Image 1 (cartoon, rainbow, N blue to C red):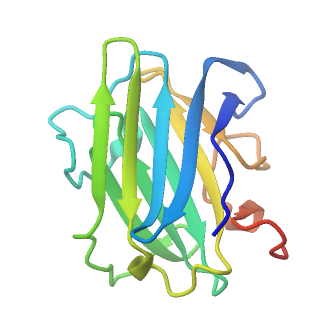
Image 2 (image 1 turned 120 degrees about the vertical axis):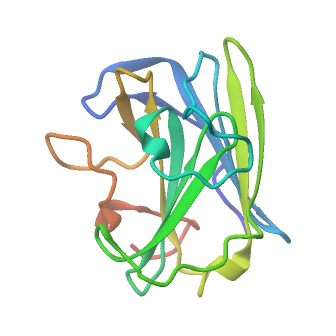
Length: 178
């Protein structure tokens, strides 16, 4: 499976430059999808969170996010903190979380957190998805906590940040129709 190479996101929701930029790389292999996110700047992870721990409300602090949209219209949101803490939720419709959530036990994270930089990755097994062939995606970052800035790979409409816009997610594979 061919996926995009390492990319940077260098502006915020309003078009203001992000310096240094945030970087991500999305890969797919036999174990599943791996998102690696990084930035050459200090980060604020959720207090009392630990690497590899499932933690709600990570978005209140610095976080990388990836959204995967299935052809059915349901989508998965994954939050990844700079220290490797994570959170995930399936949505059946925009901002409507599904009551039944899968067992996320096979999710694995890693992190390198320094005083002036961070890198975190999360491995998502293919078994989380019903059809990986037709997936669409978006990578986002919330940075510079407590004065948060909002960043998105996909150009999303709206005067205020709202990452839950699956109609604007990008094709995961080149040549897959929009």
